Length: 169
Image (cartoon, helix red, strand yellow):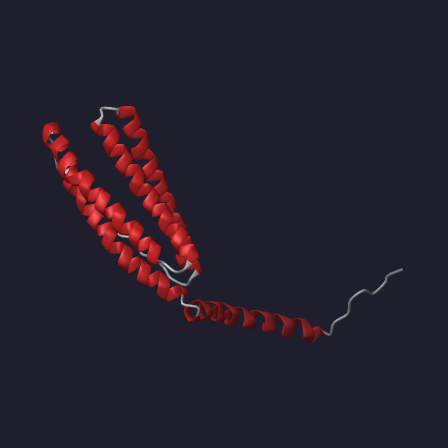
């Protein structure tokens, strides 16, 4: 004995599928439209541009450092240029972070600040001759920065922005 639990007309299934597949693009467009109207997309684009200036300054500083081969010159550069400039960059980045209105974006930016602070800790440890501690801080800084990139990419995608990363030169 068979009991009929669900019946549909033959054409109804096709119609339901067409409606469902027709709604998916509308939902996607609606989602991105919402992100634009809520200001998330604009906030992300502004963030990428404004924080990019800080990142460029940081990259130029680390590039200068990498070009120094003489250890005595490197110690002098670290004391006189690298640490003071890195402290300025951290202060700029922190001040910029305080202006971010979107809480999710502010949280991601704080990860960036944390990576900069770990780099500064590494430089101080290196100057003090604590090679193992310095290596640990450099590694932590790098891991935190990688986490920042992943978090930023994820949030950008959520807010309808695609990031194209460029390799620092």
